[in-house]
Amino acid sequence: MLLDSPSEPGQADVLICLDNPQVAKHIGSVLSARGLTVATVPVSGLDATFEQPGGQVVVTHTAMIGRVRSRLHLPVVNVEAFIFERPDHSTTGAPKQFDGPAFVKRVMTVMSDAERRRRGDGRAA
Image (cartoon, rainbow, N blue to C red; front, top):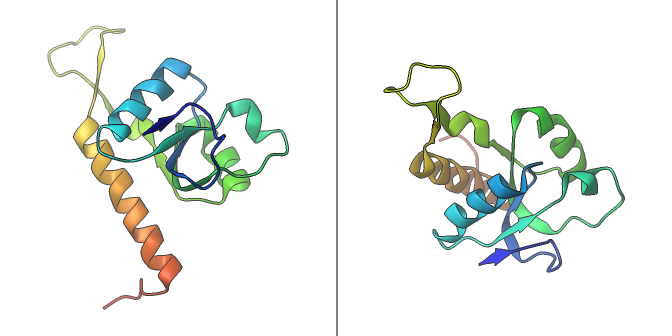
C-alpha cells in the first residue's frame, strides 16, 4: 500500500524522505510491490515540528542521512548505494541502473534487524 503522505501515523513500514518526488514515487512503488506500506516525509517536514509517522526504516539519499537520523531516529537505507552506471554506457550522463532486488533485500534486512533489536534478542550467538 502506498500512502501519499504521513497522514496515517504508525501504519507505514517504510518512510521515504527524498527531495525528488518522482524518485520517491518510484521507490515507493518498488517497495509497495513487495507488500510493504510506504509513506513519504517531505524534506521540508524535517525542519518543521511534526509527529513521526511511524515506520521501521527510512529511505533517503546521501546528502540527507544526517538530517534524517537526527529527526527520525530510525535506521536508514541510502538509495544511492543501489544506483549504478550501466556497464554498456561509458559516456558521462548516460542512464543509470537501479538495482531494485538488492535495494528491497536491504530494506527488508534492516527492518528485520531493527525488529530484533526492539525485542532485545539481537545478541551475538
